[in-house]
Length: 144
Image (tube, rainbow, N blue to C red):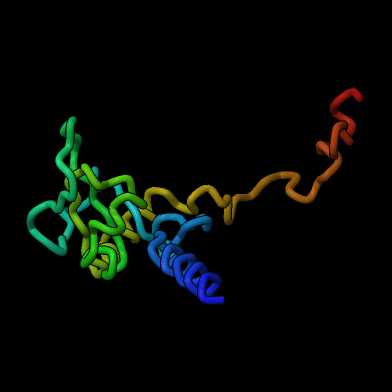
């Protein structure tokens, strides 16, 4: 029984170290998004620390990453950098207030609906005459 409890505790501990969006698709600008953001073309970001954070020396010097991460990840970056693929990269952590106030509105303005096609008007959006079902076409525009 003691071994089962120990194993359960180890599994629980390993799950808490995963990035918060593991296995979930969340886009930039949506609540709960954490990860790399592209600073090109955006106003100068407000940073948590003025100097980049680096955990491991890099063999190849790459451009720095700008990341939005939960506060607990910043405090213990050496534990979480692997989940972001950033242990050997210079990392700047952007401030949440700058991300929400500046980055997200600018991103939404230029990326609109993040590919969800919300608000798009299609001529035959309810016309299902020409669809693929299983292994054959159902419709009048394709031969079977």
